[in-house]
Length: 171
Image 1 (spheres, rainbow, N blue to C red):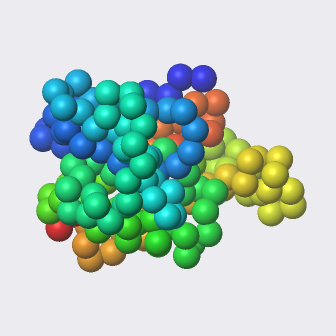
Image 2 (image 1 turned 180 degrees about the horizontal axis):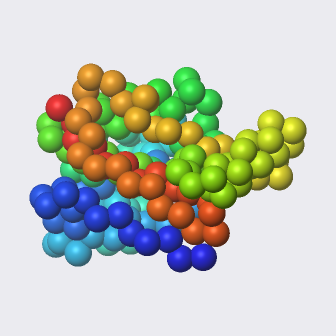
């Protein structure tokens, strides 16, 4: 299933940035074409900085206020409300003033068919969350408080499963 890419407003693209943090696990990387690019993965305790592909352990505190882009793709939809708030608080601390927050996760659709699929998914999540990998649809906007300005939000659908692509700036 191919999901179309959201198109942020002019000036909000992440490709011009040189330092990014990605929250989550796995082998994926944020790839930025600028010179001196940095890649970072965060855990609750520390981050792993990947510069030129070589991993170096660093403390997340060393990055505070220096990150251009904070990226989370399909991670927040498996976390508790408290953990989502903790991740977004950490993102706010890590981002420089005006830094970009990019979030993607499962969400509710707008058509009847999309809403039926989301309701079925929610029922499965309620009964046996492991069947859907612990993922659940949610609207990420309410988690963004006073420290954020939402620049764009788009709901995209593939096979009637909807994803929210939200881009915000640290204010």
